Each structure stands twice: as structure tokens, then as C-alpha cells.
Length: 189
Image (tube, rainbow, N blue to C red; front, side, top):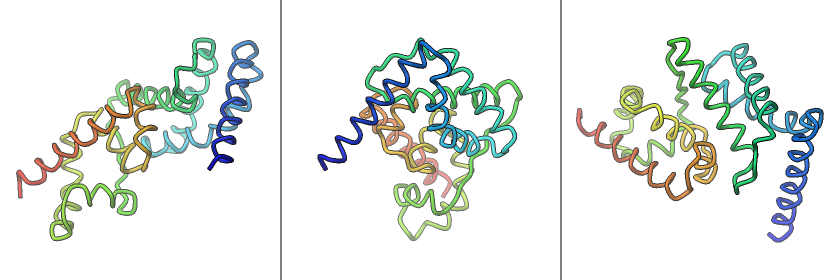
């Protein structure tokens, strides 16, 4: 346990050093790009469903990050949260500018915990069938939170970091959204 904490601290210090170097010299950004490219690309791909478009949006994410790296200040959130927030904003901008609908991929394996939160086993088939309709009734922010927490199985801390709220508030929001979804499910039963 102590070894693991030491490793995280060393990694955090190394990343902080790279960020500071990148703020002075754009060439120093390369290791950060290499470290996070795949994660950001998959995050974007999960939302837009097109590899070519995902590559374009991911490029925009890293271009914006590089252009604004001087503004980045450590406020207790990891650098990756800043990148994910940029990626989320870029995806939202794409959908807004192109009048496109967001792609939400529902895979049974990744939403099993959501199913467990919303119903008991006797209504599982009904929920499985109605989940897309229930998700359409959520706001964009609510859908993003459910997707981060349940579809991508991110911990509350990471959900909070990405959307820019506290971990406690992320938990409150998730449980409020789950209650709303339960009511929507029970409403038309």
C-alpha cells in the first residue's frame, strides 16, 4: 500500500515537471501527448462512433491543450481530468455545430451495474428494452454523468474531475439521476 502511494506520488511529480516544462517549451508536451492520446481517443470514439472523426476531434483536444497549457494550474485535479474536460467540450461542440445526435453505446456488460441500480431481476428484460427511451429523456449533462459512471465505469472522483465538480456532488448528482430514471421506468410500466 505504501509502495503504491509512493509510485503515484512519483508519477504525479514527474507529470507536474512535464507540465511545467511544456508551459515553457511546447516540445516538452510530447510525453504528455503520448501518455494520454489513446485514452482521449477512446473517450471521443465512444461518443462519436467514427474512427476518422474521433482522430480529428482528438487532434483538436491536444491542439487546444498545447495552446492553453500555460493556463493550466494544478488545483488538486489530475492533468488527465483537464484533457477529458476539453475532449467532452470538443465532442459537445461537434454535435452542436453539426446538428448531430450523440451516440450512446449500450453494452450489457458495461451497464450491468446500472441495471442493478434501477430494477430487480424480475423487470430486467423490460428495463433492457426501455433503457434507450429513458436515456433520451435525460438532459445532456445527466446523460454524460450516467455514461461516465456506468457505461465507462469511472469512479466518482474521476467523474467529478471530468465535469468539474466535487466528488460528493458527483455522488449526489448520480443518485438524483438514478431516482429520475427509476421514476421514468415505473411511470410507463
